[in-house]
Image: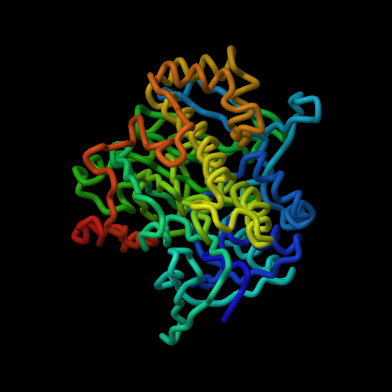
Length: 461
């Protein structure tokens, strides 16, 4: 089987990439091993993510499906009495802030919608699992070996492979990319479930809109999210260091219910009468970064090359925006440009890393100096912080802003993009130098049972 572009993974990043390719007249193949709809975490969108959907002509579909409207993010302090709010906003042609909205999504519904829409527009969806990379004599990636659900294997040859495999990091685990750096971020884990009975705000817009994202902070690396996904159901997550869970000797279900009220009095108030409508899931909340995630015949998208602490819900935004940014690069490559370069997509790779570094620096300052961070949000850098929270993080969007440059000074951090290859290495609170260049493939941790097995905690399940 042959195709110009093979996309590994049919999630939002892969589906968005397919739709942008189809707009350009290229019919890709999407290789997806799971049946949709399927449960997935990461329900909150930035304003920039909403912009991608509008470019794809999906605003009407999102409205008709009645996904909740998000007007911004409210962050509560440890006692629940103080909070700060960042609105969703866009920029007009004069680079003036304009109020906006985005969506919260039940990922099972949203992801299925995206994949089905890409199929309607002409993408070929193949059910199966990529197992091995095909390479030419010069090292160029030329496709993959896939395994069908029944076990039969088949080769798919492609001019370009777009890895949208998410945290599975397929190409990194196949050692096609540079090394995958693993960070600890205090070895956090997340417990989460969908619930009914959560107390929302009652406003229709602005800071008190009923479907806004709430972040509830206890102390460094202890926090919770509260994200409405429809009129009745809220996604709630509790994130703590792994050691806190291990010491408790509780099941994930019991730990989630017991620890939730301890995060913040405001969360305790909002969850007093909840009922679970989805089992408690567990995922390791580690961070990682893949170097040289682009090369001859391949590009990695979103979580397939980098995962940053998800406290402010940038995952969907990064995946869909990187998909959009990659497509023009893929098209020019297919037309013969930079085919002989050592890394035909090096400029794109650096551009994406600069955007992710902006997010990393912001999140690190939030954890390291939360009071200073709140002051910057409220006063000194209000507009610049609104940009980052809305997902405007790339060099073409006035980044790094004065806010981010100040954060880097406070973190005693320098970013140097002058070197062709060795730049944007993991730094700060996540980087563990003694574990750099870790090549062992990661365990599959798509379910609570998988994570418990990988962590040798079966007896607590």
